[in-house]
Length: 184
Image 1 (cartoon, rainbow, N blue to C red):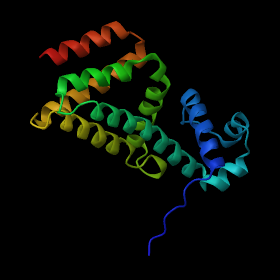
Image 2: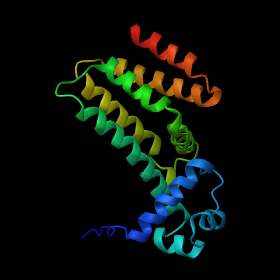
Image 3: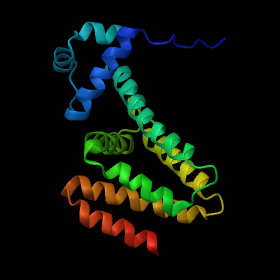
């Protein structure tokens, strides 16, 4: 019989939230438990006890970031009684992705996505693929009759514009590019 992990304790949830906030500002690439633990008011031993290993903590942080993305997808989906169309949802996604308060989350996403491509094993496993599937599912729900190639193109355009925005900070240019693509 498969065993399931018990629900996280309040302390585990609290430390995960603090570690998540820390990771949004510092990234995951060079994550070291000692500075993280100090910054969030814990110890490396407590983090290892709660998350099993550094990889376990990274998996929990990636799951936490993915939950933020899935919450967005659910919010957009719940706003409409009928599918709103690919262009409407793409614009809403861009507005959400490009918001200044989300830059740390988006930089975190880019880092995790890239690591899942370069280091496909360990805590990064399937992160990139699963986020592609999540977002393509939302785009499909927004316009079920849209061709898969069109949905994939919209997703690729949004992600490319996001990476460009994160690299340059040029919101006007990247938003103009998104709008030009969506008018085609």
